[in-house]
Image (cartoon, rainbow over all chains, first blue to last red; front, top):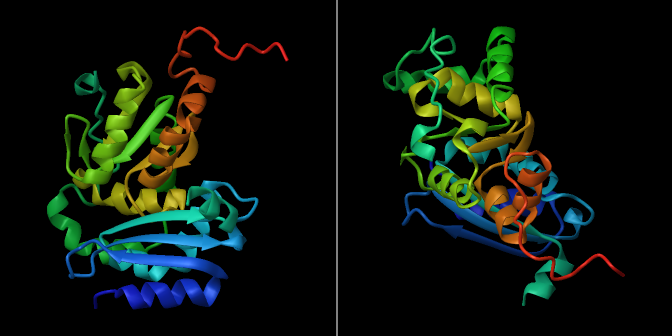
Length: 83
Length: 156
């Protein structure tokens, strides 16, 4: 069963307090390739590797069903600084 | 320089699943616990070179955009062939599923430096952009520090 952007979004929101979340389907609709941007205070004080592990962990089931998954994990401070 | 990179066939790892044609069994393989033997084989692979990249395809013929991106970044930094080894997970389905469990990381490529897991494509590209990758490679004696004149001398 294909994984939808809404599935990913729900799984992320259920686990992490996010201030900004963007899930982009880059597969042209087949649900195989997603890119997500997560902005959460839960990432504060964590290395990128630790942040990605958190996300990989909470999306374990979904990631195993899709071909490609790209993530960007920022704290609210980092996100504001980028703007 | 990547063309000459050592590309071991990992025949010992391929014992139970010698060809990519057997990938239909990977769902079952994924759920299986990593055997002690596979784990120690992967550990050996991880330790086989200062820099080890598990990827899809080979440096001269990457078979996935994410693997290609990491290879290009390493090339950009001038990682010498004798300090790196790549393993093509597409020719070895046991390695392909095993490395995910070993690293507790769900995707390929995966980069190791001196047996330490660095990350996948997103992390490597991010570290490249921030300059952390160069620092890491220099610190681990994989490349030499750029001999640019120190603009900001440590005089303060």
